[in-house]
Amino acid sequence: MTATHRPFFWLEPTGAKPPAGWQPLSDRNYWETEHRAPQWQPLLAPSPAWADDLQRVGRAVFAADKHARRDATFDRWTRHMRLSIPVTAYDRWHSAGPLLTSLLRTLTGDHWEVEFRAPGLATNVPFTFDPNSRATEVALFSGGLDSLSWAAQRATFPTSDELLLITFGEQNFGHLQDSAYRSVYRRRSRPVRQITLSQNVRIQDKQLGDPERTTRSRGFLYATTAVRAAAAEGVPVAHIPENGQLAINPPLTAGRAAACSTRSVHPWTLHLLNQLIAAVADGPVVHVHNPLAHLTKRQVCCSALTAGLTRADLATTLSCGIPPQQRPHGSNLANCGLCYPCLVRRSGLLGRDDTPYDSDPWDPRLSGDQAEHWHALLGWLDAPYTLRDLIADTPLPPETDPQHTLTVITKGREELSELREVGART
Image 1 (tube, rainbow, N blue to C red):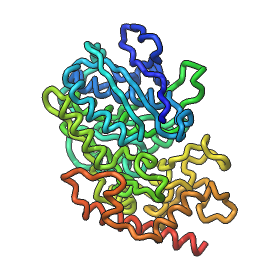
Image 2 (tube, rainbow, N blue to C red; image 1 turned 60 degrees about the vertical axis):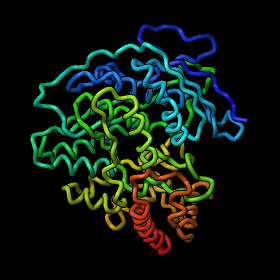
Image 3 (spheres, rainbow, N blue to C red; image 1 turned 90 degrees about the horizontal axis):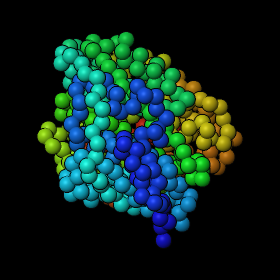
């Protein structure tokens, strides 16, 4: 039976105490300087109440996620999460509760109970800009290859309309994100603005121990923040750039099915999020869209070079899914070279890759654990991948063409097969 974790209670700014037995959470659980707090972000105008609610839900979910250790459950994965959040539009959120829990289950693989409290308190009014500086495009910008490629393409589009990039700082690798942003900014043909927030959660109750290492709900935090920014700027679309291979992120083994692989930009996730937004929005909605869903990693890299970026620009981006502190051996290089995101990166940059990797996956000196992703990839490439495999893991939304999506995965497999040939020759 799934272990039930302590329920989590997101505090209102008044500092009201939670009921007995509830773990208090608030914005103070984020390692964030005051000028990076959500209520002080330099947006065009105050965001609508529903968008404030959405971002508050995203922050509460991620903070609760980091406070509940998976290794405390019977299967060391599935948790029972209970969360109470204040919202201004109680009736709409109450009706949309099943949509939210379905979305969170898809992302994290956990059982969620989310209750809403009314009335929530509005956030502080942010600074405002002259309407002439209003953004017409809003996108997440991680500083990785995909977001850099898309941002570079859009920044070089000749227009006076502003491009707004939303970044969450990567601990210890903020300099790489800053470098990626400078690569975009110095090539711009239009106004470009960046907002940076924190994704680092601190555990204030020492009895809880270290934070949970997995971050399956992190993509929800990112997306809700981008949606709020777009709503404040009056932009109808929030872009989340991710190549089609990693957006689907097909499991390499049966043990990596469903939420055991990241699903933050999977078409089904975005479909559920768009449904949630439509259910809670009062007025114009913001649609979440992945502009790179039709591209493989190599096609994304080619687009980046076409946009004027250099091989050196691409080499200094961050793709790795295993932070240095979680690696048993190796240096503090940004990209381990061994995890699945790094393997996809290597296949996309094949023949023009100047990235300094921690290790090569075909190195015979690696332990079985270190070469785990490489061996799983080789087995996956040796097996057929069909339409049934595509839809069996996580469903696709009705508007998605399964055959088109399968074509992207097939092309990506061809790129990864070329990487395998390199390993065989080494």
